[in-house]
Length: 159
Image 1 (cartoon, rainbow, N blue to C red):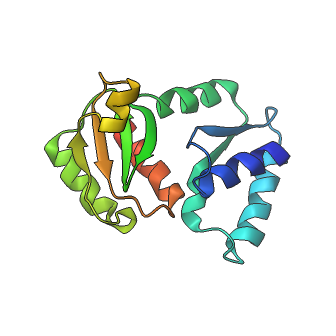
Image 2 (cartoon, rainbow, N blue to C red):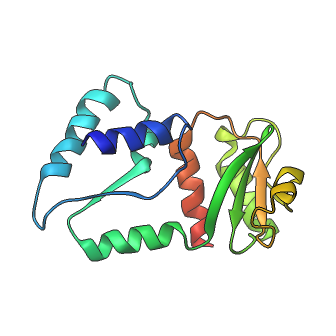
């Protein structure tokens, strides 16, 4: 539980990379469901976290499902980083212009400044030789709503 809270806090505050956090219980077990109930009844109810923060983790008692969740997280998403005021997401496949338009509309609440756009490698990435072959999207992220950012990753992985 301690490691789970630590991972969630680091993702929620932007101090750590977003990752697929899967809390796996024994088959039929209720440990993580009880933990989730506590999170919802105390942290969420008392507005210590936002409803979107619940997207930062998933609970299952099926190890095959856990593997699917992790694999799905990397279906299209590769990695991300901040470059000055832009949040850059490296992808395996570039989204279409219509998909980008839809993401700009659906995720307008987390965009601060530049809208989502296709991008090539940033000068800082070129200098370091960081995954230059991968397509990217870049946008001004509000650096606050990481649960919503996780939802954007899910959308990108569904393309």
